[in-house]
Length: 235
Ligand SMILES: NC(=O)c1ccc[n+]([C@@H]2O[C@H](COP(=O)([O-])OP(=O)(O)OC[C@H]3O[C@@H](n4cnc5c(N)ncnc54)[C@H](OP(=O)(O)O)[C@@H]3O)[C@@H](O)[C@H]2O)c1
Image (cartoon, rainbow, N blue to C red; front, side):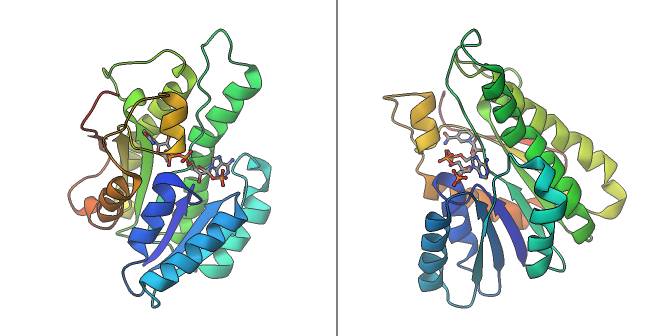
């Protein structure tokens, strides 16, 4: 399978690529800004399964004006088709609404919403029937969930991503491409520690990654246009 995972340099994305790389034949574009970490991921996955391939792609998702001319040509240089897109990259600035600057708001909305939306738009032409777009959202953006001070724009951006998943499932129903959204609960990563200092998350990144990887491969047989809470705790 040809798979694209954003936010692959650490945390949940890194582990998701490792999981997907366990299956021989999978080719995975691993996108993030941290080149060193992506190279480490490539080497580690080679040891796990030499017959899969991890392709590091260094790109800053905030550079939205470069998607058409820089990002997509690089992706097309490796893939003529895409089976799965996992929009996992995320940005969280933990600051009260009053203290958040406009720049911080724009950065969060860009990485958490505009980037997955526009990347999805550009990847869809590479997808055929059976394609699956998995958007990684948060319990913070899940309707009716407990909300937390300092996470307003982050949570709102994740709610927008969840809503987009529902809308696109409808819009592409005749093409056979599925769109689902996983609203993750607390998982022990750098981002979680920034959001909830001192809190011990019950789930490790490799555990969450196992679920995401399996869902990305099989979930579209059972779900389309769904926002699925993946959480055992609050937060
Ligand atoms: N951990 C949790 O408890 C939790 C809960 C709910 C939802 N989530 C969601 O799960 C996803 C993964 O979270 P995580 O905890 O693994 O976060 P993390 O450890 O902070 O990792 C975030 C990833 O996103 C990438 N990223 C951020 N800005 C980017 C940019 N401008 N361009 C390209 N890549 C960028 C980072 O790579 P570079 O810095 O190398 O670019 C990194 O690989 C996020 O969408 C997050 O919102 C996490």
